[in-house]
Image (cartoon, rainbow, N blue to C red; front, top):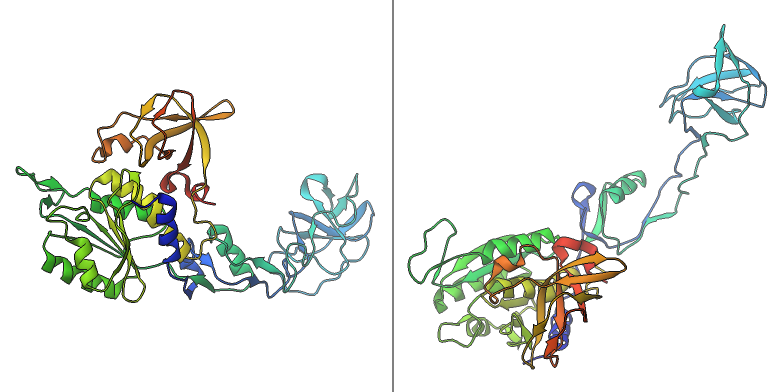
Length: 403
């Protein structure tokens, strides 16, 4: 069995390089920016008023009112001492004006503005280039784009952005005994929990699945399905059929299609019979175990780091924290255990609550968890209060899950 560190290294070493594409800013959120973005203008592009008030010149206390200046006004106006122009927020400050008097600090009588206190020079004016200078970098490559970045890109004159393309993902669940969720199981049949589980877990982590189907445990059916999906996807994720049983055909079918299997077993629980390989053109292929908790853990530990690296993310290794477990735990040597835990703060430390579970098929035990704690290969027992390394699930902690 391969240690988890070596398995993850093989996965990341065979992820493939990120590919760049250009997308409209309305569809760029969640992508990683592939190039720096510079502004083509100063921001603000002109001196503008930060408040509703009056544009004046100098420190006189009495000013004669003139016509109003509104946002978008393009008239050439020059303000002389002793004259005030009503001005709206965002409107261009006219030439000669050196300060804005806000409405709340002014008194008007017979078209005369009276000031008890004159604001200081430059008050309430946003000067040209105050926020951004022309040519200044406003977005750095490697940034994960979010809503505020879309606004900044538009301010910098961009309607299209260069980003790293998110991989096209295909998911296949297997099992002749597996039936759709709406069917009533007859003896020996189980409902397909893995397909919606995988689709949701990947989507919530920023990687929507493009194709997801189910296949029976039949070499011909599997071969036809894998052949089609390997041709139209960047990453293939399968679930089930990877153990050593007589009906576990997935690894052999993949190999018959030219997939180079890098490993088939990892020293971990759950998820020991995890398979990973590279297709004929280098496409990553995962063969996940069939039990739902094994699927969830394998996606968190291997599939998501690969997808993030392949999508240009700077952070694709799990960020490790430490917390105190709140119950005893015993295990056999030889495999690292991923414990389903609820991590919560108590004072200045993290506490880790490990709910009771009945194995890797007990998906109900994951309902109220937000993290996975690691018990080392050679650790046999953990006492209440002992510290364990843990990391958050990507779906619950987002970017805090990676470093």
